[in-house]
Length: 287
Length: 287
Image (cartoon, rainbow over all chains, first blue to last red; front, top):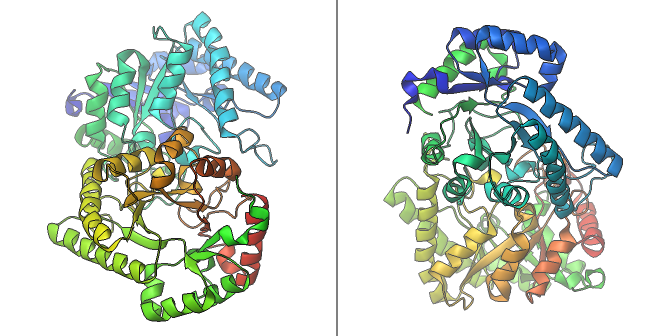
């Protein structure tokens, strides 16, 4: 296992961790600390303009460890599904311009769940739509050379965010759509979403180096007061992060360890410099 | 599949659904509606006295569809584990006195998680403690003829309530500890906890009639505002309950359909008669 204590260059920052700052502030702060990479969010990139972001990254000497995010495939109508697909293709193009190593895919939940109507109760249909959506997007992804990383989300998000909830399920889709496994389609493993899975060690090994495109860390707090925005700083919760990192690195994974913390009532309220200090400290000591 | 529209006798009420009433009120109201059975909570039974409860049930002609609940095995010390085991044995004895068909087991979470100390991060150890605890309890259960039903809980409870989170995992334990499968050890399937599992149909079939000791229903609301106490009335959420009931009954299951709704801000605040009316109506129409 890599020694992170002396290697801040392996640290990747998902910019959602610092919602109190804009992208420019984040890039500056990361560069000045020797942080290796960031994973920005598409909405922030669009707001700032792709070229401006590209220039800032170059000036700072900062790489991307991922790009957030594509997906949200299930929809009630064929027209909506087409719109989703077009938006996803655009996101891939932008990620390409920024030299992202991959685009994270969050599957999406039940059709209609965010449309103000009674959502579908057919999770099998939702899952089929996700598979079909990824299959279609994969053509564009392959054409432009932008890998797709399916990120299974915790089962508590199955209805409204992602109906792909285990690494096993994500890998089933990878193997069905991309049997060669030559780097076009893989997975992102976020400790927060998968730590509970009794099959995790085995599935990480199954993913292997070629499918394993991202590794994200934060912690599970007890109690968790909000299902989306009460994620913990590494070390403040109950996830055995080093154990999972060991499994990940045993595959040969040598990419960035991406810190992604959604924390409305704690870390998002603090000073950004303090948050980065704590992230770096915990990265070195408990990840 | 059974036609529930004309069969209130298949309805079982988990008494936590009516926290606004005491056990006596619940028994009276269920009896007067032709409801077949209740699943009471051990704390309520102790409060009222086992013999008094036994008498009330007999007078009302009401059966039990389950008994809540044993389990919570993981602990930090051998002494605590012994206390847990003794308490579980006592719960089984009481369930026996009340002619419960089985005792539901909620595994428990990480050792120390409710002790005001930093909890363990070793979920494998917690799971081993659960297996060992069930193995020990099974001796007493077999002696007195009280079946144990392991209830996998949703993965969002893995840290603090139950580290057995899939039906597959629960069945692995059953097959390890009770390979004959002669009715001493089985599972309870609660739609709320397992609806998201892509492996659910297959695992219900694997459980089969002998292992499938309980079937619980409520609904998953979108959004879910509280991880414990914001469960939905059947029909108000996104679980395809009839589909799951179909899988359950295909095994030959002909037991009670147990309604269990934890709802602090909605159903627990309403008049008990209204809640029972709605439960019965939804039982007949959407379950």
